[in-house]
Length: 470
Image 1 (tube, helix red, strand yellow):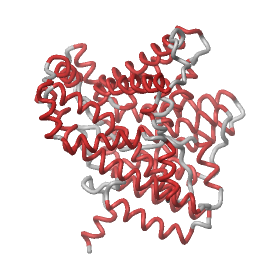
Image 2 (cartoon, rainbow, N blue to C red):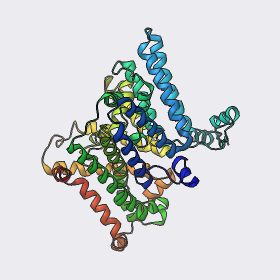
Image 3 (tube, rainbow, N blue to C red):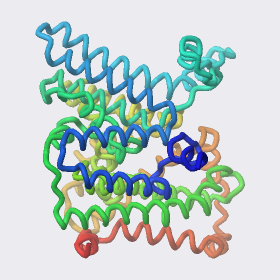
């Protein structure tokens, strides 16, 4: 019995509440049972889901849930300060404090190693990382955290951006502050989208907190469709091709031929899409069954006809966040062509850094930024830019998809060295003569890859027909 209670209530790194784990669905079933009893009581419903979300984060990240609580409390009161202060100076102080505190927490946990390693490399030093927050906690509260390492809290990149958007939107006069801290905590920590998005704006979500539960029969079917689709994409496509082929190649590019490296690259372009969009599909479906609508985060990105269009289809909530809270405040396209391109490059470079604390993510973001800049110049002289002929559209999709896949080299590789090794193998050790052997050896993997790309590129009316069946 004690072991059972420990498994239920204590944090275990081996048993996180992930969408693809049985533990999550047991947790979700319990949530639905309790929710079915209290859903008509708005205050009780929101408080319950806030508590459930904190429990979810506790089971996923352990004591890091305290960071989430700190972010919730600080931004709730800073939001009130911004809204209710009569003096502009206090409003500015509130929004600056919110941005600084949130970015400090994100930078401390996510980018300390990158900063220290970069300084060591540039100045030939041997600085070591120490977890000063853990040291402070051990000193003043008697905890026993490991002070020699800084671990990254799950989902901190998502909820940090979410709370920043909340205080900034209050400062801009776009939203009013949430009245009760439990409601705000629910908005920040809502478990379906807490770990992997989408990044939800207060204006989109907060009004739903005060509405009665409503779910049509069609929405119920749509939610089930999204959950099953997400699980299929993640488990049967993404995980399968990753474990059986992609991970092996990227772990040791020099141990495989150029053709195998190239196929792994195309495989990863599919894997990262089905993994990320699969999680988002599940999140939207799980939230919808609880009566909450989350924004669409992917819109057939590999059907994009140019790089700019791709970023309007891929991780839409992040792309729009970077546009509204970074690109436009930098000046957007209001200060001439050169500054527009500079602002765009800054946005994409920082967007790359948001994805991972390593310079190869910055390179990835920079290449995507250059792709958008070059496209903006090219579309002014291209005779086919406005062509609607199927051949021109197909050609533009082909070029865009291959460019995006090329950039994945730096996104997936563990280091710049691994990225260079992959490029070397493709360009200097392709070994076309072994293609038939490779295709046969990995026939099931390539069949799953073909299925994944086929389901992505089929006409939308086919997908709608399948969805309507639910």
